[in-house]
Length: 143
Image (cartoon, rainbow, N blue to C red; front, side):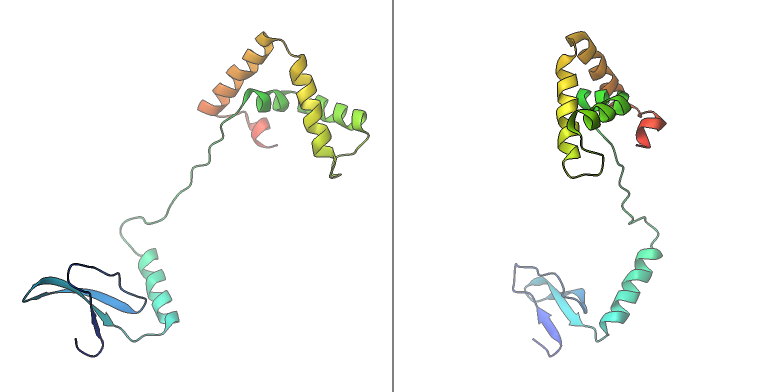
């Protein structure tokens, strides 16, 4: 092993550390990875990596597609949001923004959901399935 070189043991491959560049060399006993230390500052290395990322021919950018799976319960709340929020405020006596308001809101949604007939629940399930597979209306998405 020469100074400035690190060879992997035979049969095992190691990824190069930061600041090392990888090369393959053919020796007497087959191919082996050789890691050569490249003396550069960490900032220079970051600049080179950033330039390479920004100027690569293939897109390395990862795009995230946000989707939402709607439930019948959440579709019911969205369709009756104003009425439910007002009733939760009146019944609990807690105004929106108070820490206990979310609990009162969930209790009110549950109590109104339990009052629905099965046909009405199935209608909200169909609406939730439609919103999940396609796109919810703009007014719902803005909330």
